[in-house]
Image (tube, protein in one colour):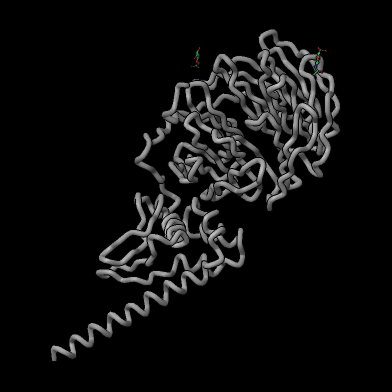
Length: 438
Ligand SMILES: *[C@@H]1O[C@H](CO)[C@@H](O)[C@H](O)[C@H]1NC(C)=O
Ligand SMILES: *[C@@H]1O[C@H](CO)[C@@H](O)[C@H](O)[C@H]1NC(C)=O
């Protein structure tokens, strides 16, 4: 009797061993050549998004992406676990993705009852419809304030910048440039600037404002004196973006597929940068002083603004570029059509982080003083991200204070550290991020 029991236990252990070993091998074999795909998706969020991230970047890893979420091969005290080996970097990454898929912040292979299994940490709600919070930082506080500022207007704000005195200067869809009080959104000045939407606005070192519009014109303003100083003519398409450059010049990007560099003192044209084969959508100055341009032609180009020469071209599987930005660490933030939002190395094109979690395409983003990123999409979801890891720190999904037509147009961080969003229903919304004043 005793021997028989002994034999049964041994048999069970043997079967158990064979089974766990077989499944671990299975997991390894389907994900064997997917370590790059997996390591590029470590910041995904939700099973659907995580699977999509892996297989859209690497179609051959489709089976691996499925196995990550179905491979519960170990049972300990009635609970099923994914076995994973602590010293195996692929296993560690698979575990992280598995946990991200379940809306945990992270996961790691850890010992449990003599076995090494994937364990998830920082338990968070299991659906995207709830806010995801973290305890490592002071949580964001949403101020319950919404100011309706454009009651006289029939249109909305396309772009924002912060003036030296803390006020906001806004590019209006109706052709007006407006100055707003950053604390309560009150309009303190309104100037009719372009016939048609003002698409972009920036501030020059001398305090003048540069605006670019649907009327293909670029104008330089002394808003204190309510004066237009210079008009820059030359684009044959509408002006999508204007940027004040570190050397005092102005760069503009247009639907005529060109970028132009202008002398901001006398308005003369210095260079026309040719190379994009579709609309130039956004421009950003890198830490090196080079200019990055993003286009509907699905490329990003890096230009030397002193010589007007093309330095690099990034053709990495981009979709149409919608917005560019700069992170504190110097990496380029790229917002592409079809809700792709990621950071890349501007010189190698290497993808650093995929920010996954928006159900709809983000419309704009802002980098907060801490380096975190705020994004808002066309489906009323607002997300605060850890820029370096891609972790979602806070997610607002259709907060009750939102109205219908509440689609974000533009985001800006004010001098007091607040985040101001302009929406298509002509409202401004102000969030206290808990980061200011700075
Ligand atoms: C908005 O704030 C400014 C100063 O911060 C103040 O002068 C103004 O009266 C305020 N407007 C409203 C409507 O509260
Ligand atoms: C810009 O224009 C001003 C005024 O004409 C001139 O003094 C300056 O040299 C110009 N700068 C460049 C780089 O052309």
